[in-house]
Image 1: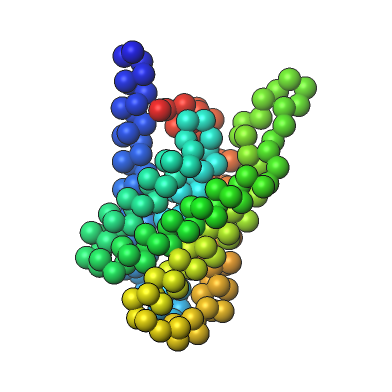
Image 2: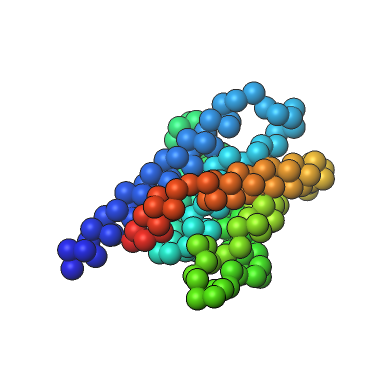
Amino acid sequence: MSDERGLATRKLALTALFICFAASLSALETMLPPICPIAGVRVGLGNVVTLFILYIGGRWGGREVLTVSILRCFTAALITGSLMNAAYGLMGGLFACGAMLAVRRIFPKNKEENGITPRFLFDLSYIPFTGIAGAIAHIIGQLLTAVIFYGTLSVLAYTPILMASAVIGGAFTGACTMLLLKKLPRKWVDFVRNCG
């Protein structure tokens, strides 16, 4: 029983750490000079944390991805002082999580070879594609929120540019996550994976 409590406590602490780290990356990105003069065009650095949790496996799954994604939006909004960002981020985050979970399921899993269990259940080479799917879904969620807030479809005029930025940003964050998972020492990955 004490072991279970210890694992649960470690997982709670790690989840809080992931939320803070993702929110800090998101907030930092809003404070940096824009990479494009069009509002809403961002790389989405906070998504690196979401993808990390999505692909690390073990005791981390869809529920944890959703928890971190939602709470990251509110935490980032508190840091930046923008409740409007929370609304956009929440809707975009929900759409992105759904898309990334769905896309991860359709990609092939690593198979056991010669009795050796693969280090990761899911093939890490597909993470950039998962990142792109999440980024595109995030933009769709944000555009839907903008249409509801402003009551006009004219905001959809930005769709082509936002989608292009989503593909680039999603591929970038996916590649960063893939490199992070591959380069982290195995003992660290195993520690995070087995907490919970």
